[in-house]
Length: 123
Image 1 (cartoon, rainbow, N blue to C red):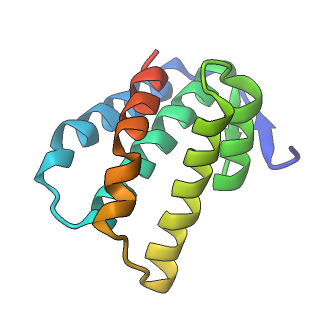
Image 2 (image 1 turned 135 degrees about the vertical axis):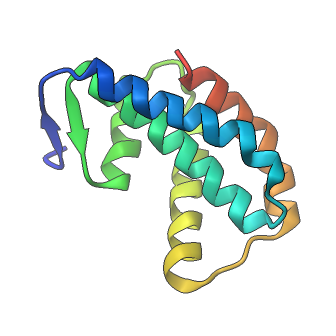
Protein backbone atom coordinates (compact mmCIF):
# COMPACT_ATOMS: atom_id res chain seq x y z
CA UNK A 1 0.00 0.00 0.00
CA UNK A 2 2.72 2.47 -0.95
CA UNK A 3 0.08 4.69 -2.55
CA UNK A 4 -1.34 5.44 0.90
CA UNK A 5 0.38 8.20 2.84
CA UNK A 6 0.42 8.84 6.58
CA UNK A 7 -0.69 12.41 7.34
CA UNK A 8 -1.89 14.34 10.35
CA UNK A 9 -5.47 13.58 11.28
CA UNK A 10 -7.79 16.14 9.75
CA UNK A 11 -11.21 16.15 11.40
CA UNK A 12 -12.29 19.33 9.58
CA UNK A 13 -11.61 17.85 6.15
CA UNK A 14 -13.18 14.55 7.18
CA UNK A 15 -16.38 16.35 8.21
CA UNK A 16 -16.42 18.46 5.03
CA UNK A 17 -16.21 15.31 2.86
CA UNK A 18 -18.88 13.56 4.90
CA UNK A 19 -21.17 16.60 4.52
CA UNK A 20 -20.52 16.67 0.77
CA UNK A 21 -21.39 12.98 0.51
CA UNK A 22 -24.62 13.53 2.48
CA UNK A 23 -25.55 16.40 0.17
CA UNK A 24 -24.92 14.27 -2.93
CA UNK A 25 -26.99 11.46 -1.44
CA UNK A 26 -29.90 13.79 -0.69
CA UNK A 27 -30.10 14.90 -4.33
CA UNK A 28 -29.46 11.58 -6.09
CA UNK A 29 -33.17 10.97 -6.75
CA UNK A 30 -33.08 13.94 -9.15
CA UNK A 31 -30.87 11.97 -11.54
CA UNK A 32 -32.53 9.89 -14.25
CA UNK A 33 -29.80 8.12 -16.24
CA UNK A 34 -28.41 4.93 -14.65
CA UNK A 35 -24.81 5.84 -15.54
CA UNK A 36 -25.12 9.17 -13.71
CA UNK A 37 -26.65 7.49 -10.66
CA UNK A 38 -23.85 4.90 -10.58
CA UNK A 39 -21.23 7.66 -10.89
CA UNK A 40 -22.84 9.57 -8.05
CA UNK A 41 -23.12 6.51 -5.79
CA UNK A 42 -19.44 5.81 -6.37
CA UNK A 43 -18.51 9.43 -5.58
CA UNK A 44 -20.51 9.26 -2.33
CA UNK A 45 -18.80 6.04 -1.27
CA UNK A 46 -15.39 7.42 -2.27
CA UNK A 47 -15.95 10.59 -0.24
CA UNK A 48 -17.09 8.62 2.82
CA UNK A 49 -14.05 6.33 2.69
CA UNK A 50 -11.77 9.34 2.16
CA UNK A 51 -13.42 11.00 5.16
CA UNK A 52 -12.61 7.92 7.25
CA UNK A 53 -9.02 8.04 6.00
CA UNK A 54 -8.61 11.70 7.01
CA UNK A 55 -9.99 10.90 10.47
CA UNK A 56 -7.42 8.12 10.81
CA UNK A 57 -4.55 10.18 9.38
CA UNK A 58 -4.19 8.69 5.91
CA UNK A 59 -4.47 9.92 2.34
CA UNK A 60 -4.32 8.46 -1.16
CA UNK A 61 -4.72 9.76 -4.68
CA UNK A 62 -5.48 6.29 -6.04
CA UNK A 63 -9.04 5.02 -6.22
CA UNK A 64 -7.77 1.44 -6.25
CA UNK A 65 -5.71 2.05 -3.11
CA UNK A 66 -8.76 3.67 -1.52
CA UNK A 67 -10.74 0.45 -2.00
CA UNK A 68 -7.81 -1.61 -0.67
CA UNK A 69 -7.63 0.66 2.38
CA UNK A 70 -11.35 0.17 3.00
CA UNK A 71 -10.96 -3.59 2.72
CA UNK A 72 -8.16 -3.63 5.30
CA UNK A 73 -9.42 -0.99 7.71
CA UNK A 74 -13.20 -0.62 7.62
CA UNK A 75 -14.20 -3.87 9.24
CA UNK A 76 -17.96 -3.24 9.08
CA UNK A 77 -17.84 -3.82 5.31
CA UNK A 78 -18.21 -7.39 4.10
CA UNK A 79 -16.05 -8.86 1.36
CA UNK A 80 -19.03 -8.79 -1.03
CA UNK A 81 -19.55 -5.09 -0.26
CA UNK A 82 -15.88 -4.39 -0.94
CA UNK A 83 -16.23 -6.30 -4.21
CA UNK A 84 -19.21 -4.10 -5.15
CA UNK A 85 -17.30 -0.90 -4.29
CA UNK A 86 -14.49 -2.05 -6.57
CA UNK A 87 -17.01 -2.96 -9.27
CA UNK A 88 -18.42 0.58 -9.01
CA UNK A 89 -14.88 2.00 -9.25
CA UNK A 90 -14.26 0.11 -12.49
CA UNK A 91 -17.71 0.98 -13.85
CA UNK A 92 -17.18 4.68 -13.04
CA UNK A 93 -13.80 4.64 -14.83
CA UNK A 94 -15.37 3.03 -17.87
CA UNK A 95 -18.13 5.65 -17.89
CA UNK A 96 -15.79 8.62 -17.48
CA UNK A 97 -12.94 7.52 -19.73
CA UNK A 98 -14.61 5.30 -22.33
CA UNK A 99 -18.19 6.55 -22.50
CA UNK A 100 -19.63 3.23 -21.34
CA UNK A 101 -23.31 3.20 -20.48
CA UNK A 102 -24.99 1.39 -17.62
CA UNK A 103 -28.16 -0.65 -17.91
CA UNK A 104 -31.12 -0.06 -15.65
CA UNK A 105 -30.77 -3.71 -14.65
CA UNK A 106 -27.17 -3.17 -13.43
CA UNK A 107 -28.38 -0.37 -11.18
CA UNK A 108 -31.55 -2.17 -10.07
CA UNK A 109 -29.73 -5.33 -8.97
CA UNK A 110 -27.17 -3.40 -6.90
CA UNK A 111 -28.91 -0.31 -5.57
CA UNK A 112 -30.11 -1.73 -2.23
CA UNK A 113 -26.63 -2.99 -1.36
CA UNK A 114 -25.10 0.32 -2.45
CA UNK A 115 -27.48 2.15 -0.10
CA UNK A 116 -26.57 -0.25 2.71
CA UNK A 117 -22.85 0.44 2.14
CA UNK A 118 -23.46 4.19 2.24
CA UNK A 119 -25.42 3.87 5.49
CA UNK A 120 -22.63 1.79 7.04
CA UNK A 121 -19.99 4.33 6.04
CA UNK A 122 -21.77 7.27 7.68
CA UNK A 123 -20.23 6.55 11.11
